[in-house]
Each structure stands twice: as structure tokens, then as C-alpha cells.
Length: 260
Image (cartoon, rainbow, N blue to C red):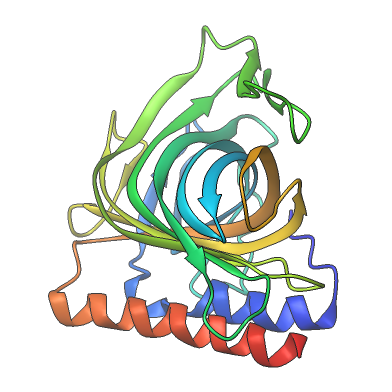
């Protein structure tokens, strides 16, 4: 599921995927069909998104829609894949989301942009029939959409965002395609996700592996493909949120240094 295309991107991706280990709280995934519970700290995913941007000299607004499937459960660290689960053998897990915010040039990186989310809404679904698909319109398609298809009548909503906390993404020219980190309040639904403490927070972060149709000005349905992971935990304290900003800043600095 992780498609790191260069050594530079891999190094930056490791930072992105491990920048927030303090938020990774062990959770219990209560698998369907008698698969038994799984104790995990992370779930990894791949995704596709379409972005519309209205900007002058790189400054303006954007809106984004996307979705993706989850690949494996991991724990106790991100490097530890948990074997023998039912994920992608007896059921699938996917998410769809939409967000919007502002965009501005990334300081010190010619051609780089920083998108700051103002809103981010996400829904997490269990697909017991493994027959759901997610497709995106080609980059540049007017009115392009990310669509959920196949047979969705048996899909079950198992969690959703319940309020936006913070989020930012970066797009860089050249080999380093960018990164993202979004933090939301999160509500599990139906008992699929549980934990020693109530799950109230979800941290989605990772890297972009491909950008199509992007630029500093206006564009329609620019396409992003990428991969990352999510961890769940109680709501962080304000001091913890400062670490989030530090992690994003460090990732941006690393990418600017590598592409010079």
C-alpha cells in the first residue's frame, strides 16, 4: 500500500508517518464474522483525492474530496505489521472525506504550496462483502468526483469525524510531492473500534506519492495519490497540539532541504 518512489520521499515519509507516536494509543478492532479482536496502534491506508483551487500568485482557497482503502493493522510500532487478520481477506475497510481551507506559497520553497484546512469531514466504513470500489475522475475534469461504487448496500458505518481540530498539507515541486496531517475529533459507531480509554481523536498523516494537474494558480480537479496511517487516542492536551505544529514544520524543512 505504501508507494515510496524515491529515497528522498521514503526518508520524508518515515518522518511523516512517525512524527506523532505520542498520539498512538492501543485500540481493539472487533472484527466481523468471528474473526476475533485485534490489538493495534495504527492502521495504514492508500488514498486518492481531487482538489479544486482558486488562487492568485499561489494564495487563495481550495476544496478537496477523497477516499481510500486500509491495508493492514500495525502495532505496537508502525513498523510492525500484524499478521493473520481478516482485513482484506474477509472484509475491507475504507473511508471517504471532504475538506476545504486556504492555500498560500510555502516560504523558502519556489513552487511549493501549503494548504491549511478549515474543515475536514470523514466517514469510516466496513465492507463485509469486499465488493465496494473507489474511483476518481481524471485530473482536470470539470466537476470531477471521487465516487464510491460497486455494491454498497451491505457496508456499515463504523466511525466518523465529530469536529475538526487542525490540518495542513504541502505540495512541493520535483521529486518530493508533499505530505499531510489532519487531526479530528472522532466518534466510533457500532463497536468495531474500542479501547482501554474512549476513542475521541484520530490522527491521519502520510505522504503524497503523485500529483497531477497542480500549479500555483487556479486549477480544477488536481489529483493526489498517496499513502499514510491513522492512529486513535483520547483528545490531546493543548501542549500536545504544539507538537503537531512542530512535526509539520520539521517535515516541511526536511523536504525543502532535500529538493535544493
